[in-house]
Length: 480
Image 1: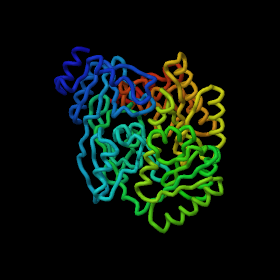
Image 2 (image 1 turned 60 degrees about the horizontal axis):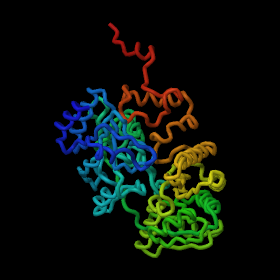
Image 3 (image 1 turned 90 degrees about the horizontal axis):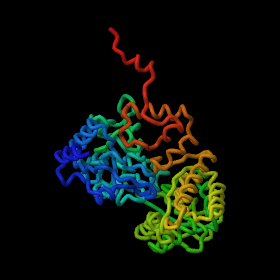
Image 4 (image 1 turned 45 degrees about the vertical axis):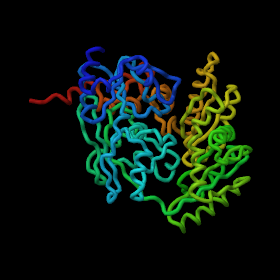
């Protein structure tokens, strides 16, 4: 790759290309550290023009490319290709335009969620998607995974808050998908890019939809005897027609970790806690908040704590959002999984997860978005013990495939990546996967953009570079 390295250095300058083994190892995994591959080269552009030239150079060389934001993903979605170039977008940190009148902001892909909200706050606005890693995760990564966060129950996922994208396609073509104006005519190609996990191109700029901050926010924490009891309370809330901004559940094992790390005031003796938050206009919020309190008590809540002010509310959320990292207080290693089930089946699925945990002899902590049934079980293990990492990964996949058995999905917001590609046939037929491959091939016919992600390995379900049928080939022949 010496020739390509020299070409990239001409484009980015020597400081914009890493080829030393120690530098490359920094990029060998994302937040799912169980899978590691060192890229051949790392390119660090600062502009769309530089990304374009890098992608064009890789296309000429026939080299695969893997886009990466902050590397906070949890499905090995940014796992490098061993013979490829990793394009790190973390230096693309400019906020390009803020338009308060139209509630929009245009940013480079490397801007973090927290930076967006700091720029929007003086105008009384905010960006609704709020992954727990918002202090470090980038807007480009949000787009790749269609991230949600705690408040997606009421406000939806990233796809609901993206107006337009600038993307460098795998052949180096720059295009803009979507528009600043609502409901542009034509096919929703913007929607096809959001959640495509870097397999269709490299997103470089994003135009965001911003929301007006709610007039009032009320937050409470309910203690329950068990996760199943807390799950029943969630079903009761939603069944009553109440749509909170967020409903989060933390089980006892995760509570211990959160309290060790943050001291948010969660009860260490509770089997599980629910964080319930409502926002909106004062009259509606107060009425629904009282109804939510009553429903939690009827469902068996042993204690209710209502945040007295913004500071206490912030402490509660600091505890919840620290949960994944805090589990490091309990175990040297762990796998964070991501699946979705129908809300009404929370109690029985949580019981099944507990049973699987006991059968495998491995601890599982549960911290998740209970309001929309988006589970995040954390399987704890010690990688220093022979075979334990493999057992943990196997248990985590069993849990996520359990979600499918109960009518759910193998991912809610972390994506499929490399980790869960083999589970796609549990949820989709071969025909389904072939159609998805055709969509991908429309953007990337050579299969060079983030290869090995989302789809099963060759031989399992038709994965591999999509090749058009003779009929499709004939349709493209220009008639005399």
